[in-house]
Amino acid sequence: MPNALDFFISQFRSHLDLSNEPSGYYRPRPYRNASVRFRNCALADFNERRDILINEAGLNTFLFRADKIPGCDLLSDSGTTTMTSEQWAAMIVGDEAYGSNEGYFELKQQVGETFGPDWRQKSGLRVGDREPLFIFHQGRAAENALFTVLSRELKKTGFPKPKPFSSDLLPQLRSRIENRIRAVKGQTVGPFEPFFVVPSNSHFDTTEGNIEDKFMVPLNLPCREHLENNENFPFRGNMDLEALENLLASEPGRVPLVYVTITNNTGGGQPVSMENIKRVREITRRHKVPFFFDACRFAENAWFIREEEKGYGDRRIGDIVREMFDQVDGFHISFKKDGLGNIGGAICLREDGAFTKRFPQFANELTDYQIMTEGHPTYGGLAGRDLKALAEGLRTVTRQDYLNLRVRQMQRFGDRLTMLGIPIVRPIGGHAIYIDIDKFFDGAGRDEELKGISFTSLLLIAGHRFCELGLYAFGSFDGRKEVPPEPRVNNVRAAVPRLTYEDRDLFAAAEAVKILHDHRDRIPGVRVDYGRDLKLRHFKSRFSFIM
Image 1 (cartoon, one colour):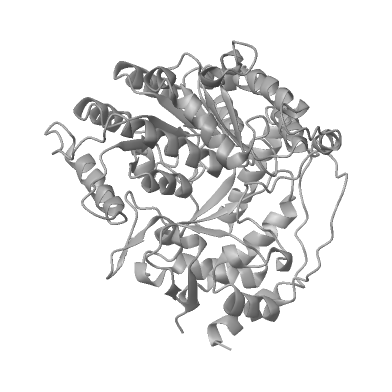
Image 2 (cartoon, one colour; image 1 turned 45 degrees about the vertical axis):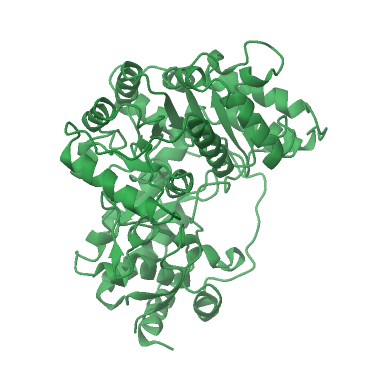
């Protein structure tokens, strides 16, 4: 087998018999284990994992068998939560009626309790265009529905013909939009050219994919502090307000809605401040543009506001959440994150919001789409028992003791990596650690070598699964070379499932990362054997080591 792989296996194996360092924790967890499951694989099975990685998975972490991961599976925090006993109990009494099941009404009630009374249906019974809650089987399906129906509504008035950008548009902003337009146009047939732009603090990969699939242009506007890598700024997830103001003032009619992701996943799991949220609301209101959240990690974002933003230190998490959601006209959410569920998603529309007023038929059209793709609107592609579990999850997720445990565990994990000399995005976010691959390799590697893919592959051999979210996930191939994302992102993410791992598990993963860092000059690059020019290519591609 390749010498580099044999070398790293020997290093991983040599650490198995090292003594654990004593722990120094004096605060017990606010929960206890009610059930455990033993793994059916062993940490010492290095050769088996190497064979699966190379011969079955093609170095793609998404294609590696989960039942062969003996360590931490940190591929995603989506749908991987360990649910509470209360959630499992709620599932047992789930109502599986096809229409208007018990869980539907319980979830509707809890949405109003969690996000505020404005997200309750004011008319009582469901009446087409006045329904605020649209259930889907997961957040990705909700994204697809949102932008599919939005595209149809925009087409009703005829897509505007391409026109030159205003001279008032900032030059760097024009360049970034033009580059994204060329990328979207390259996926279409014929002379069609995208016109509409959907700005965000940073879109995630599937959000970008859904927007581009509807021939619109996703545009990332992360704040200046994030671009400058300001590690002392607590809200690096903020949106660039100057760029947003310039875009909406210079290109009226080009932006159908503004999107803010809380927390900012692409930007390192960084939170968005209440001040920034309210400023975005002011700007969008002035320009009569609807404002939406990608709300997947709303509770974690509220925790950071309470901890870091002046005036919120004595506020309840639930009150902060409701103040956040008072600012928006709608939101989409994956309940697989801060819904603490294994499945589920939703779109919520404010009944009297700017979006509903601009697109008065949207809710009816969305209901039709929901019926055709997800089933009856009162179950939205989910079993009734899942709806019960989600309602219970929304009750749990704003608990202060839960959020303290959740976010501070992430901080201990990140601090451990930093202590071991691993360069990570700081400050540490709420759901994941992001390893800066450019700094990890001292900036010496070529982009074409895709060292982030090689890093995650070797870590799988060690027994832990991370995810490349950098040059390959967010970049593209122009037919000759790799084109990095703009702004440049080159991270490997370790997303920690909620209530699943203890510190010793995460610290074991950190030790494996240290081995790779200590011998980073021996980490080979990879070549792309399949899928380089595909959309959402990181889910499907196959690779091999360059030896």
